Structure formats: C-alpha cells, structure tokens
Length: 396
Image (cartoon, rainbow, N blue to C red; front, top):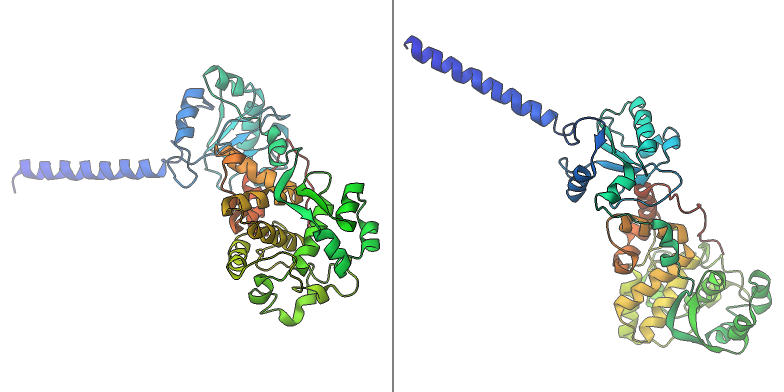
C-alpha cells in the first residue's frame, strides 16, 4: 500500500470518528437544544414550539407553567399554575428530571424572571421564560384563555335537567317504605315543591343545580336501590357479593328507609324496562364511574353510584339516545363532584377543547372519572388558582 492510500484511509477514519462524535453530541444535547439560547423565549418562538408541543415526543415536549399571581388568564397548552413566589413549596409540580425543558410565563415577564431564578436554584438546567409575558404574547397576536369562567360552564346556574318528570316516583318510594319521610325531613331541609314530590307527586322535570344536589342524590339513591335492575342480577352485587349486599355504603348506608335497606334492594318495578332496555342499562352502567371510588355504576357500592343508575334507568326507559344520556350523567356528576370536573374541564381547555365539545362518554370512563383517574388528572393539572378546594364526596 503506497503512502497516498495510507493517508486517504487515515483521513477517512478521522472523518468517521468526527462524524460519530457530532451525532452523539447532537443526541445527548437534543433536549437541551430544544429551547432557544439565553433565558428568554420570544412570542414567535413560543408559538412555533406550542404548535409542536407533545409531552410524549422528546423533540416537542416541555413543561409550560403560568407563574402569574393572582390569576389573570393563561396561554393554551399550559401544563400547570404555580405562583411565582410559591415555587419552592410547590416544587413537586416541577418535572423530576432536572434537565427537562421548562418555560415559565407571567403577565409582563417580571414574575417569570424571578421564578426562573428560583427554579434554577432548585437545580434545573434548562429553564426559560416568555419575554414580555402575556402582554407581549397578545401584542404578537396570541390568544389568552380565562379559565376562571369554567365553573359557570361546568355548573350552570340554571342546572342540568332531564327530559323526565318526577311523576309519582317520590310518593311511591315513601309509600313502599324505601323512604321514611319523617327521617328524611330530619336530614334534608326541603322546599314546599320538594315536599310535594314525596307526598303528592309532581310533573316538574328532574333537575339538579347548586341548591338541591343533596335532595336529588338522596331521592335518586333510593330509586336506584329499590328498582329491579340487571345490575343487581348480573353485576357484582348479585354475584360476587350476593351474601354481603348490606356491607356497602349504598345499601347499609341508606338509613332513611323503614327498616333494613337491603330489604328493598332490587325489589320494585318503579321504572318500566324491557329486557332489551335492561341490557342497555347494563352496557352504559359499565362505563360510568365516579371520582369517589374505583368502581363503575355496574357495581354501585356508594350513593352516587345508585343515583347514577337511577338516571340511566329513567332515560333508557324513555328511549333517550345514548349520547344524551352520557351528557346528562356528566352534568349530574359535575354537581356532585364539582372540584373533580372543573379540574377535568381545565385539562381539556388547556388542550383547546371546550367543555361543550368534550366526549361525555370518554370523560365518564375510568380514565377521568374513577377515583384513580380523577387523581391522576388533578396531578397533571395541578392547583386551580381560580377555585378553592373542597366539595364532593360519597357521604350520605
């Protein structure tokens, strides 16, 4: 081999080594190079990054945090709210990976700049903030969302109404002993119209709002308990737990009956249902969860489960379409568990999906409405700066 060939081979080897080093360096620095150099991100750069934002993709994933206090709106695809002066005590909301890309923003850039220094002191190496904040974002043509209005949307003042009236259902429950009226009066401070529902009957449509949620859940609880249902014949309460039916909050916890509540379980045909309709009730019940536990309405072991079962039976009996049934159930669940569903609505709003456009069937599934699903969603969303915590449980 002559000298020229040896030189050529040596040159090629050097080139290959250099190429490999460049590729390795690129891969190692891919996450770090996601954000622009310096400590600021311009509105234009942020807009491009948000268009590709996908937490599952290393090339597009970054944590986007609103640090402005008090809350004055937010940019779509925000991941969480952490007040600029509460970063340290809420550090659990930051990514576990100290090299993960993070972008902070506030209204003008002052608070986010302060928050940036705090986050860096916590050991994070890849932190930027939006130059000029939300004010600059709007000047550049960006939009802001005001999620403080979500409560009015999820929990409308006019309430959620079913297409079914109470009729004589309340009176039948009292006459049958499922509801002990004197005991019920001690627990629920009823309006004259609510008294009428239990004593005379009423053509008023079944409706839930912020003022009557306890009355509604208790009546529907009693109805769901007493109505003959495929859920009690073929579900866990009729199979695995048949000999333990009185041990659940929905059965043993119903102490407003005359005598033992289990004596009324699955006993009456208060809601006329064909075998085909019973099958439909079962199918829907299997996909309707509640945030207080991990079971679907197919296993109604708490008051809200039995109340939801009664709603399904009423609407199926009246041939209401499935899409509407899920929407109505979501509305009632929202009044029973307001914090959970305002949090879910926040999650979807930050993805650009308004509450009226969500798939109610999806939301009522275990991913969002089971106890575990609701907790995981709340962890993703973080604290809601526009709503105090509390509200919604399986208590009687």
